[in-house]
Image (cartoon, rainbow, N blue to C red; front, side):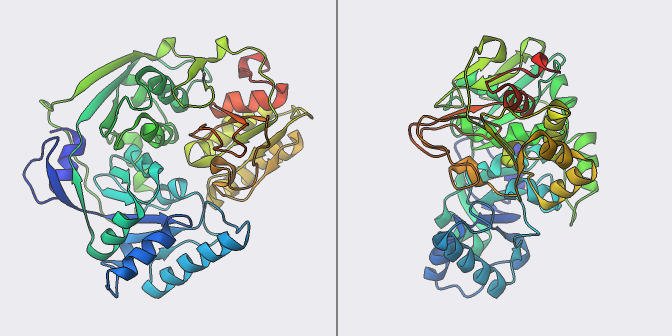
Length: 417
């Protein structure tokens, strides 16, 4: 069995599972946010169940429209807050919260070998730690809150092998954008993307989160990494409870194997309006922009901010655009403050926000007007994703985003650093 199949078999009480098989799976953690939780709560209440199956295994995070941007978002957050308190759930209030997919690993709430489901498509982020993590609809989340189980079909696994050494300014965002550009937005449809190879072994955990996060952009059910010494180092410093590491079998069967030489991969840019519409930075010429966003559950971690600060240090954001930087959690914000990164951002002319998903989904803190272009470290650039249907979003890594903020056009950090 593959790594994903090993985890699913263990959580369904079976010796083995195979792709296409329907199973009931015991879950270790259930997640919802201020957009998806209210619907899940209403469905939970319709079930006629008075208590959730395990209050310590259900997490609610107000991150999409919080701090509340309007009355409707305030009502959504209020409903989630009251339910979480009534049921004694794990809940993070504004001032102690962060973007859910940055926050939960940081807090040691998602661990290797676990099955994690969330009412958010980017729940697949946790596969970076060797967990089987996937997004589900709010009605499925309601049933999971009541029973602790989900019903699903075992997905096939596609093996992605990354060989060679990464170039300067090239990281996890570039590997996953290049991959999505190669296979398309449905290239891994209802499959597990398993990431391996020497380039992956040398990739920091933050970069692995970025890759797992965007597995859904290739249509995947989950993205997953094997647990190595880097994973263990990250997890052991944070784990709130025991966990089990699963190993795949040497004769594991894959739907297919796809290989890349990363030494040939440069910084990538996803053009509107799909994450698969990818070009290397060397082929991008003279595209003037109006806004830069650095943050999100894809690239809002401390290492992302360090990279952005390295480019922005001693330089000024172009006066013809806005640069918005959003740390992924309060802890990331605090560490960035202690390291002087926040000072660098503010001195450069960037705006720094409290943790929020905000502009990623066109919520607030950077909504685009018609005709505006934004370079963003987020994960989606669909039509109208960040505001007006007549706006454009270009997806990049933090280094390219920072360089673009300085030069006022999509640019490589090589041009200024």
